[in-house]
Image (tube, rainbow, N blue to C red):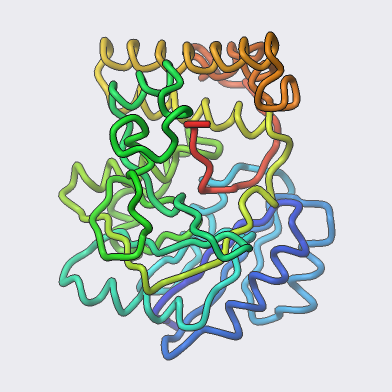
Length: 326
């Protein structure tokens, strides 16, 4: 039976956060018909049992291995019955009317679009990571030169952050992140879903860039709001950063030509190397605990050449709004 929207939630070792997320969904669904599809990436922490017992209305797919965020979403999308797919992080809490607002907004656009909303941190302050600007050679140079760190949130020196915009107005953007992403299921199928070369991080940027190439809008509405406890379902910072840069490099190599992508990857590597040196020599950003030295030492796992079959990376689960400008 068809419904208006299928909410897709991928879980990994985040039982308590997932419980709060699911409770908020069922409490605030609004005047749209919806189903919830949960894919558990072999958490082993009781998440599967919790979903079965406390949220029997949810459709649960319990996997025996952690197959990554993108593949797990594709599993859910293949089973979904909604006219729309709504990707939602398990470390989010849905505000009243969010689902209805986002679906209503998408329908008002008059054509297929990828839509996102406004994410807040638990303290009520803005989490800007619901959307990003697309990477450019300039944005990567700013990362390499640490300008995006020195001038964090600057429209000029940290352009991927989209400057001081508070996500408080309707705006077309380059990238809608997967922590809160709505797309017509027909469009999702037409685009082929997430590219499974991305274990996690970068798959949502890739989807947005492919949508842009097909002439599809990517739009944010401030009326669809969630609270996002960034990072609650991820592993340690080094593991997260390693996966983040693997996704970034994959994105550049997929969407840019050979020369441009080589320059872009070199800039990414330079930025990581400089931060690692700063952390080791000066102890800034937490020193070794910042994760930068560990990511630099593991650079063979995220720089070109890692794509061979059999390469493995640390298991982690999504915290979709992480950026790379820190």
